[in-house]
Image 1 (cartoon, rainbow, N blue to C red):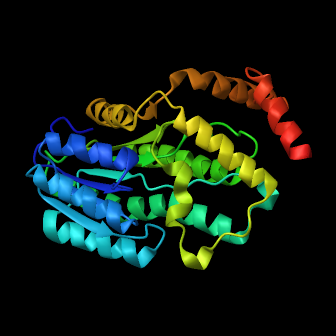
Image 2 (image 1 turned 90 degrees about the vertical axis):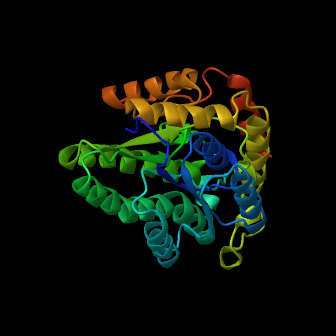
Length: 300
């Protein structure tokens, strides 16, 4: 929970676009110090220059969040310049689709590296720093927000590799919240579960590292990409609106942040099946046309 953001420090991974950049813009308007972290060099420079022009203290670092050494260097640099951060947004993420057995080892390593290990590194490096600051200063307030997805609460087909990573982030963050409540009343956590919001995550391949190069896409992966492009591109909720939800959640110590609460009906159906031991429900019950199209496409 953070009641006053002025003069506080925010570390934002995936900070050069999407939710990260929009949170940086809000943070700048509130007088925060900003640490922008991203792997895309040109976007990072543009974001840095934009924040600098707003007159706030800003540091930009090109970092591969999946790399432990890179993240350690980031944590050291943040502490040396600003001290312990108050807001840590473990937000960097990449997406991929396709039938779960068609994902290559490189696909798994890439998504698990960014989506899961990136969050793990952010939590393991910055949480102790924040707890120590809280111990030294009774007025210190801190909050960690990890970006998951509605795919962390659901299991839509043809998205298995992405679902796995986002379920991990939900579990990690729920546990982080409970662990923090054991040891501190000054630092808390939230999980962001957006649905389809135009952020550029559907074009993640632009930042895929060369050593994890992709194989030729399968039919299911091509279909998954096309469906993702259409769904994300038609999103009615903006990244800026979601960023405001993040700041609102920190002010009130609200844990679950949803961009599309109506999508929770599918989560309720899924959890009801889990509780009663029923087989997983039809994910296309409300839109059978989509399910039929997907099945027909995969049978060709």
